Image (cartoon, rainbow, N blue to C red; front, side, top):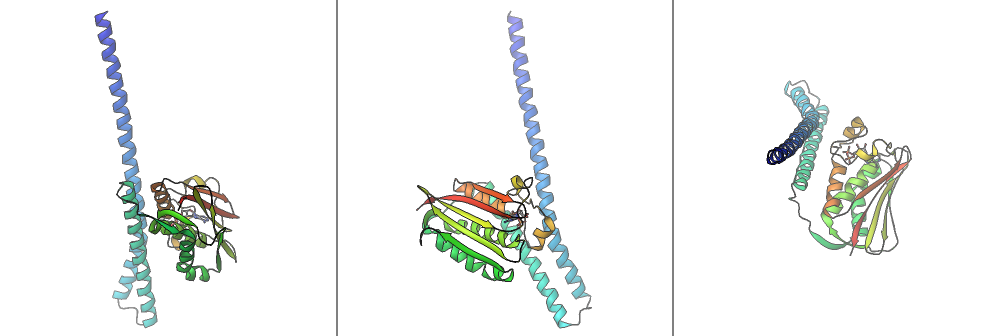
Length: 259
Ligand code: ADP
């Protein structure tokens, strides 16, 4: 009996250990695959603007560009690529700090309607150049929330500029709606743009995921905007929801604590 028991215990422990090790190995393998994919994505993102800068610099250095207008145009394009690189690096930095729990919220009470209007002003030129109409639909002149103002401003910028970029019609309509509920405020950003196919919808909050990568890049997108939005809302213990009808439009919504 003793022998049998001890053997059984031994076997049980051993198999438990083995299972544990196998799952640890699986986990390490998974992390390794994730790391590889991540680095692959990052270098891919950095390559496009870097190669473009390299190309323009070489052309300018070869002295083939005598026309000052063309030279200025090339310098401007170099500037755009540099700006793009800075955006990507800043976005990555922000995601990193969220994932390592370094980001602390700075909560205060503020009027979300005012923040929406300030965001509209900030994006006004972009909206005008695309013939997009931005409007606020609200039940009260002022709607107070308790949240990190700077980070919620980032959420609004990302959602509204996406709505501008992924418009699909002559007349893009983008509506931000704020609704006061019992303890919370509901904020919705909706557009009548190109919409998102159901199969892509669950993936749009992933880092670097884009439905159409060429269009996103043309718009200067890093594929990180919605991942950042999700992180910011999670830090507030809130979720972001999305509903979309392909070729009809998209609605993003989230809640904040009432102020
Ligand atoms: P990007 O920098 O590519 O815009 P995001 O993380 O902000 O990255 O968005 C991920 C993808 O989700 C976009 O590439 C686009 O395909 C899709 N998307 C985001 N917002 C909208 C929207 N309002 N309408 C249609 N598609 C959208």
